[in-house]
Length: 142
Image (cartoon, rainbow, N blue to C red; front, top):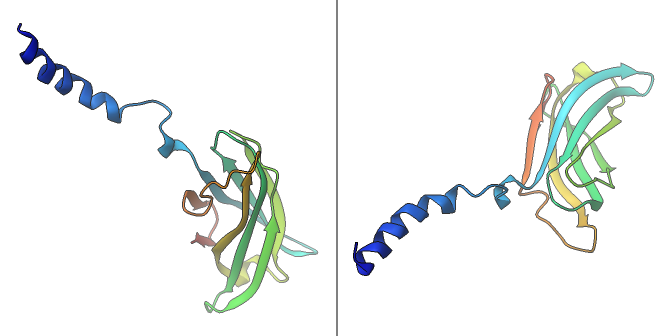
């Protein structure tokens, strides 16, 4: 095979490898799952799973959430500090989301991530790369 013909063949063979790199940056980010609801004397307790899929720990991480009632009206606003989040780990956090019963809540809106800082001072895109989910009847949205 002549040298000029080898280069286009090599390029065609290597091109797919650009899209198959393990550990690509797209796998990084955060996940937030509303995992469980439980009523107690403080009202409706929500248990969240927060997955840090970044290569660094987050020494600052907080959420700004709005709670909506069954009529779709804002019932409460919560500012929650969840730091620190260890790199590559899932954290479990439980807190009250409503002074009343859980069945009075229809959805939670993640309005913002007002604080997000990696160890060493980096500022990852915590809101844009955040994947949301819920295993309850309450919808969790951005």
